[in-house]
Amino acid sequence: MRRILRYSTMLALTTLFSFLAESASAQQTLPTDRAAYVSDVSYWLGTFVPAKTEHTAAEMAASANAFVDSLDASLQKKIRFDLLSDERRQWTNLPAMRRNTAGLRLGELNRQQLELACQLMASLFSTRGYEKMRGIMLADDQLLNQGKPRDGFGTENFFLCLFGTPSPTEPWAFQLDGHHIGVNVSLAGDDITMAPSFIGTQPQTFQLGSRSLRPLTGEIDDSYRFINSLNDEQRIRAVQGKQRGRIMTGPGQDDVTPALKGLSCADLTVQQKTILMRLISQWVNDLPAPSAKQRMQEIENEMPQIRFVWNGEMEAGSDISYRIQGPSIIIEYACQDLGGDPQEHLHTVYRNPRNDYGGQLK
Image (cartoon, rainbow, N blue to C red):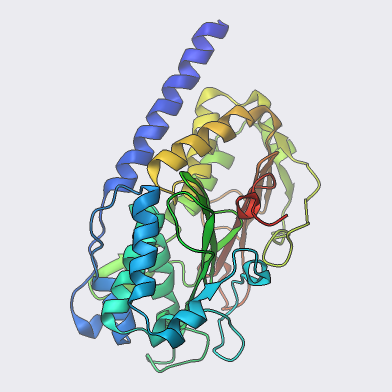
C-alpha cells in the first residue's frame, strides 16, 4: 500500500512539474495599439517581446551588465549598490514616491534602456513570472486619473536596484520596487531565490485594449480549489475564523515568524497535496523552471511539517486570507479594504525563513 501511495504521489508531482514547464513556455501577447496604454513606458513595457533565454547564470549576468552599460554615469549611480547595502531590506509594496525611493525609476529610461531592463527581468523570471510582474505594473496604470501622471503610481513609478556586480559565479542581487511589487532576487552561480518578495495587484482584473488581464489568477482560483477539497474535519482545523486576517510577514518584518497553527498537511490525500502544491507553485513558478522544480521538491519533502490556515468564507469571490507555513516557506495572501471591493485589491508575501535574501544578509 505504501509503495502504491508513493507511486501516486510521484505521478501527481510529475504532472505538476509538467504543468510548470508548460506554463512557463506560453508567451502572452498584449495589444500593440499605442492608444491602449497611458504612457510611453507602459507601451514599451507592454509591447516588448523578450528574446528567448535559457535562464543560465551567465545569461542573467550578461543581461544585467548589458543594461547597466546602456546607462550614463548618473543613472548607473542610482541603480548600483553594495551587495550588503541596507537598501536590500528596504523593499516595499507602497507607492514608490520619487523623493524617497532609492533606485532607478522606469520613467527615467529611454526605450532602448527600458527594453534592456525588460530583457534582464525576462532572464531572471520564468516567462509566466515575467508576465505576472508586467501585468501588475500595467494594472497600476488603472489607478491613475484618466491616465494623468500620479507620483508613486503607474508603470513609470517602479524602481530597479542592482546589488553587487552581476556575475555568473559570484553573489549579486536584483530588486524591483513599486506599488504591489517588492521583489528580491538573490543569485550565486546557479542558485537563485525570490525570497522575500511581495506580490499583489489592484485591480484584480482589468482591460488593456482588447485583452483582459488577471495577474494573480492561480493564487486566487487554486486557493478555493484547495479549501473546498477538504473534508469537514480538515476544514474545522484549517478555518480559523469568518473574518479575513492580516499579513504578518510583509516588508519590514524580516524577523517575524507567525505561530504555527491550522491544518497539518501530513495527512492530505494525494489529490489534496497536488492541489496545494499547485497553489504553492504560483509563487515558486515565477522562477525559471530548473530552479522552480528544485524548490518545489524541497517544499514537497517538508509537506508533513506544513500547516495551512484560512480565514473567511469558502465560496469563490469571498473576502479571505490564507497562510501556508513550513520550515522553509511562508506564503500569505489577504484581500484589502482600500478601494471598496476587497477582491479587487490583493496582497501576497512569499518568504523562505531558511534562505531569505539567499542567505547573503546575516
